[in-house]
Length: 230
Image (cartoon, rainbow, N blue to C red; front, side):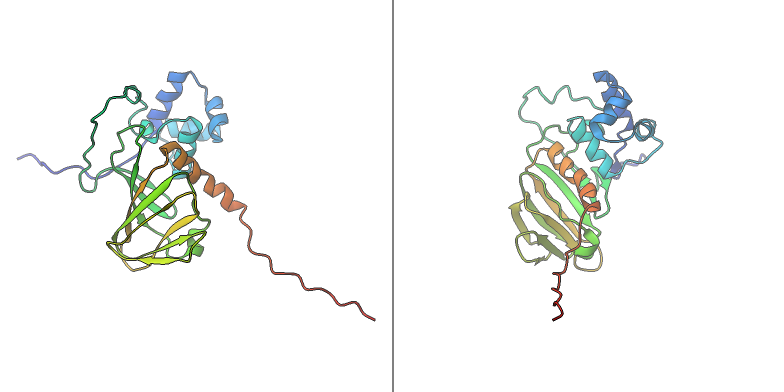
């Protein structure tokens, strides 16, 4: 009897898609390097599957080449993305999707094969257990709705005091405001997030974060004035 079970989630391997996209547009590795800010040696390793692609690199490729992230997952064939066809749909079975691992989140993208989506669904498992561990808050265009699927979550923003969200709680907010999801309980903490930002803009914002984080400065204590001796 054949095993009818569905495959587990698949991990994105955009190397072949990047190479196909580059050849389609006639770009050299040097030109792609200039657009994305990634060294040609790194791009070559990615194309030949000799390097795993971090979320930062994937975001920089998507933003620099101005392509939907789904084009990198599906081999770069976006011929139907501009057809204007209506009535499309996508079914994602439990545990399926495209996975991207980052320092603070383990992202799972449902409906990854649909290009130019108006809403970006993301299932994120939280890794950081403190705001200090998380680092700089994330900002990106648009609005965001988050529903806590599992565990307890501390939600931080740049304008409001932190708030504790339990499983079943949700929040809707302006994602241009700095924000972070922090795991506040033992065991898995997962959030379903729906983002209205175009996918390339969302990824571009996340790609900028590591570079800004390097330049992050700690608060400076006020100087004490020296009293002049009489």
